[in-house]
Image (cartoon, rainbow, N blue to C red; front, top):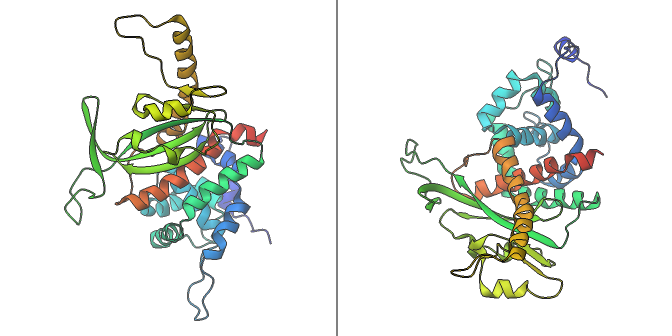
Length: 318
């Protein structure tokens, strides 16, 4: 049965300006495979208990609020407040102020914990990529590998009085960073992330390799951090390509053919930065939100799943 529209929603629907947030939410409404994700989570979602009590929030509402958290970098308390403050967010979640119960921060937190407990963020990532494959955005024969540092709060002004013990420090250039790393394998054709691994910040990029390949590659594109003789040999030969920048012999200039190859490599490898840009610039994910690797790892799977949908939104909506 269709929900009766309130006067507030009617007034909002007749306003002239459509905000950037509303445009973004309309796009994501169209590209997220809601029915597949609901079917994935539904077996684990609690039903109304025999002892009565307050009815559980509809699963569709909680999933949409969870997505809003990822897209707008919202903590659990901020997600609750945003549902009161933003009509666009309420309408996206399917809620009417005054008619529907707005889930509180504890309800939002419990839903996130349910997803983490059943490893559902990883399952969502796999389900989204399966959906993309069925829509013609399948994996090709080339993989780009790279990693990015996710900063963690370095402050000790918390209940424990310490920094997160599962995060570590690393030096990049002349600067030190404290946090974790997200290692990704990206399809060289579509630019979507097909593999994800996480580690503390001090783990060298080269130690995460096999986890980032899907096993059917004929070409791999990487920076110098991943170079070793065994890997180079595996992707050297007929119908293979080792996409690492060529270096000039010591005391000599780089051959013009190698310069052209380097130009090609740089052009292809730039795609690996696109998923990171979506997370950090579009979704505002610039720091870890939770303590411990496990919770942040779960969030990264959800972020990259939604980021994949955003990256290929035009192809999905064509």
